[in-house]
Amino acid sequence: MPIVTVKMLEGRSDDQKRALVEKVTEAVSETTNAPKERVSVVIEEMSPANFGVAGKRPSDS
Image (tube, rainbow, N blue to C red):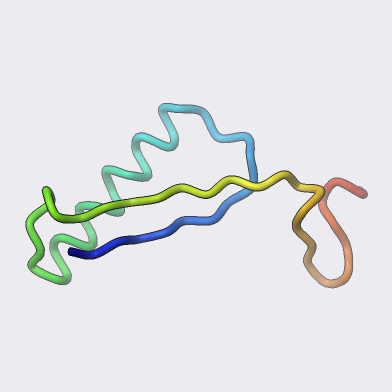
């Protein structure tokens, strides 16, 4: 049973998250031969205040 965790910044719509879950499920199912019913996708959203790249947080821009 594949379990995929997607970590991303807050701000995507429900439609975008729904599409992400569908496409990730499809890709994992195709590449692992796991039935779609056995593929789980977890979306973990974080505030831009809790993320940084190259020493800076997007929330500080």
